[in-house]
Image 1 (tube, rainbow, N blue to C red):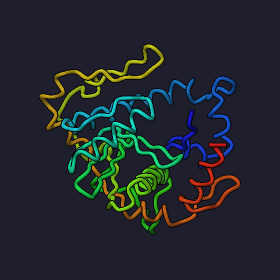
Image 2: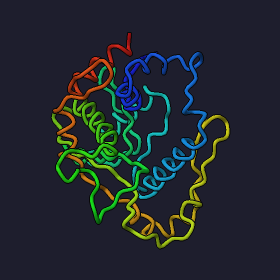
Image 3: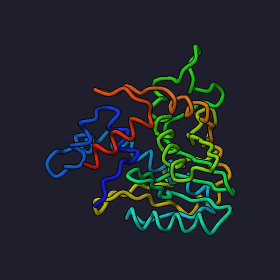
Image 4: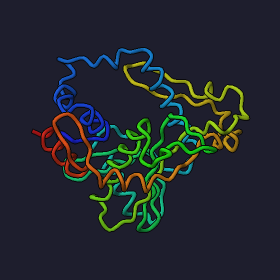
Length: 251
């Protein structure tokens, strides 16, 4: 099987490159994070917000296959056949880099790359950049995540213009819908996670979608792609670091 450097593996490697070695041997080395009930609860929130975004982009075409090659083939077919299209979880590969993008909007030769996160954001007081400049530490992993995806997408489509966004719950907005989270039931049966959506969500989607805000992160992504990233044993720009880690993981 191909050994791709994905956005989750890249994020893991930034914490510690050696974790790439252990991540490919899950039958031998257990990941304690998978057993942590608190982290699982946080992950459930991420699944719920992700599903809300899919409901908002109701006209989008979702790439459902978990098989990397099938998902990539379906993605490329839809992109080649449509000048304008919204794709949910499309698969983009370039050599041994592979990403599943939350929302990808194509308009002729331009792309909007949208990463959906459960992290709250205050639109009344933007929380990406510090008062003295520079990306705030809690936001840096999210920007690096988007930057890695743009890096791979740009390699795959070098002649395209790409704009980047985070889609986040806006804590400056008060929900007009009671029990909204209960409309997204998280099911963990059969060793997989899926979200069961209450059909009533479609009657209140205009109110619900106000809770998510799309934040442009273009200038921060450019900053992350141009500056060096320091992780244990390595200091490289993101493109160089990604190349190094991809080759290491492949071999």
